[in-house]
Image (cartoon, rainbow, N blue to C red; front, side, top):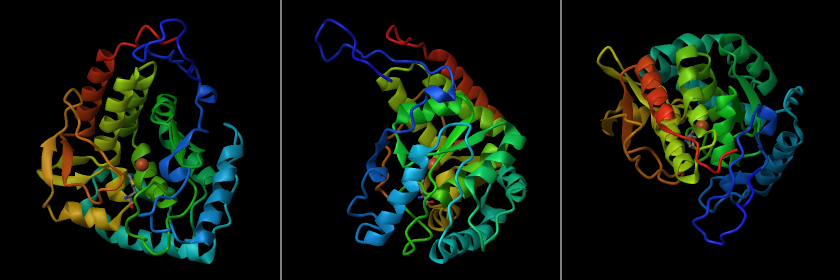
Length: 305
Ligand code: TIH
Ligand code: FE2
């Protein structure tokens, strides 16, 4: 979807940025990092059967077209056990550690420990709540494509399970992270608008702006916390889907800083383990206002069409 700008053979010449007009023009086929190949420090790196299973599930996402029924996965008893272990431990911490909006939305999805929810069913419930839908994806997408999807109220979701050896923390997105971490929050209309504002800002953004927005997304949607009656509560999906990270946040030893989309965001990494600092929103309405102001300050470059 991007083409090189004609003439002037200089590396500083930006390529033409195509603004998708619908979700059909958002490419979910460019898979980076873990999605393409597990790295050596991934818990499943030495497990051939696990890697083959991932390839099979990834192929389902590769063949899926927007608007089609999302094929069901017949999760193995081992995969169901990983889901159940993660869910039961997390559920014990949610009342004290998760934000009120998350706790209010969670029951809509009826998560059970003995069954991994299917993306199609979850997408239907989500659509009823906030108009958002889920689209399967093989692994980590190109940031521009992922962020563009948010503008159209589409959340790209992996469908494979984390490795059984590490149910309480994994370095990459998986179905536990998507369904427990992201989906209930996206059922909240104010939060969902906040996420959409990041997506709208990404339409036609240049490479530098995309990189900044990726970090903004990371420090809010993935790892944000919110002040609630003077207490710090989790709303970031990477905290809500990891018992280890949620417990770490609750211990209060990580640094806290106010979130500001206009300031330089710190470097992010999938490999650093638990966050050493969390950014704090005063409320989702405040976050929405901040992100809308920021989105309005981003002008699509001359190369956007
Ligand atoms: N660490 C999260 C978990 O274990 O659920 C997954 C990730 C979220 C963001 C990056 S990796
Ligand atoms: Fe995520």
